[in-house]
Image (cartoon, rainbow, N blue to C red; front, side, top):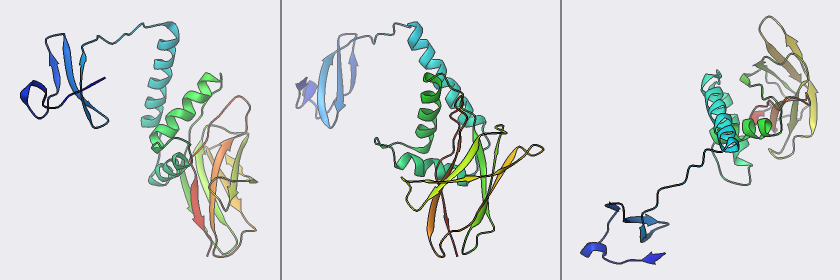
Length: 194
């Protein structure tokens, strides 16, 4: 990479000249390179990955997430080794499931209610009528306690009644499919007992 000062007798330049050279800024460094048409081999694997990406984005936009869900996905994204948004964490979860040959059924529209000093109720929608669990803990990275819920076929909702919690304590929890063929999940929600 050639570092340039005063390219083209100016303080800064960007763009290309004909189809021969390109002026740009890369990581704060002014640079000039020869113009190269990016390769797009359109291999079968590349097309398959692009299809997964399109499906994931479409699913994100078509799922009826509420504000609580968006916050949960952002919190889940915050524990990833690479910084990302909740949107990106959802896309990654979907693509990881598909690459592993699994389904990814959305779990959405979370509602926290009946918060007391020892528990709360959490309701969430999904088409998964079996193999769904809530996992809870006092750390967003260790959600070791498993809670079973009840599925309502008419509303397609799971209701989890969580009890036995400590008073005035912040808890983190998520809901995940335990079906070996489905990797559907939520982000990480927060609740504080009274």
